[in-house]
Length: 114
Length: 113
Image (cartoon, rainbow over the protein chains, first blue to last red):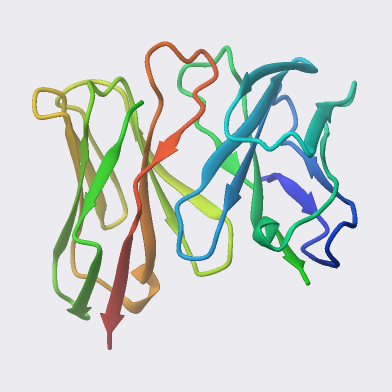
């Protein structure tokens, strides 16, 4: 079965650089979520999109922005990177209108800021 | 905001032993999700519980939801090394229409052969 695809798997950037993470949800899933997981931490919700509109916002820094495109894929744009941004970034997708549709996570993008 | 407390934080068992992981919520549970994560990898969906008293099983893993206690338990029977990993419980607040999840801190399971 198709899963959530994230790219790249690994990314190394320097401080103050920018990064773009991509997420391709499971086919027919209309909702995308972004999570950040620091070392030894539980995943923290950043932002979500439903039908290309932002639907909820969590602890996402102002330096970050995201969007969902017409083909439902999503991108997380990160600017002015800081050392503390080093983390695993997960994307998850679900079918919002299906109450028995759990969130399915991708394998994540490991971002290292040096 | 809803907080989930998992216990134990870590667990080491001998292969073949049974074990239980608990997840307790600070607020009423309207749905509880269990995920498994290998270190540095994605979260694998295990089970979703939506009703009080609900119990689901998949292979050797059983999860139960006790709404009154605001608690869920995950039980593994006859553990195997393949069960090793971090188990995370997640819950969505009732006012969330997006099922954004808040997670517990996780339980690290080690299964010794």
